[in-house]
Amino acid sequence: MKTIADLKNISGFYDKPWLVLGTGPGLSKLFELDPAVNIHNYNIWAINHAVLFVKHVTIASLADYEAVHEITPHPFSCEAMLTRAKNFNVPAYYYSRIHYFNYEGDSCTLPGVTYLPCSSSSSLAFMVLGMLGIKEIYSLGLDGGKGDKHPFFDFFDSVRRYAPIKIDYTQHNEGCYHWCREYDIKWGKL
Image 1 (cartoon, rainbow, N blue to C red):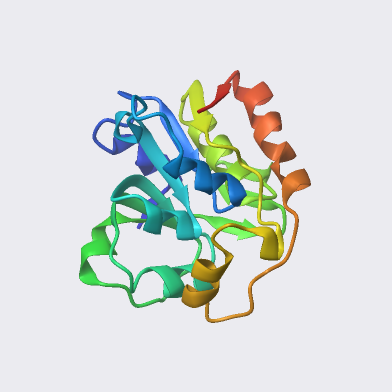
Image 2 (cartoon, rainbow, N blue to C red; image 1 turned 90 degrees about the vertical axis):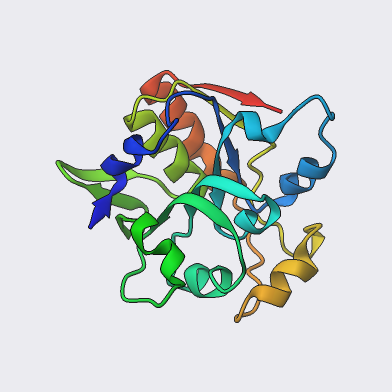
């Protein structure tokens, strides 16, 4: 079973800066980028349904069981899938790409580490990348889901088996700033 520590073995892991794509309203900026900005010049960490907006991602972070079942029937390409869900059926393409982590409440457990605050999927990305030595991370704006004001609300509603969550995750993303300070990460916005 592959773990978070094995992510560093992905080809090109340290060769390009990292772009973290969340599922909040900032995702719409993906389609408004200056044509000179080529997102494929970045390693991409896509959170949950954001994987469906990019042809290929380096890491598809599908933390929850529901996300795995909602997203994997749709075609997307990734070097690795990070999830805490176990015992699920996915297309064979993904089997060798799955990396597991344990997550309970607002903490993660990793080999040799007992407690780490990571209260959102975006702060999990910053924590893991920081632990693995990444010093530069970009985003389009990790702004969390904000219910029916979300520009992709209808799309997400169409692929979710459950009612859309109407939560403001803004404060959850304080974890991103925490991990930037902890690992001396430069966080830039595209």
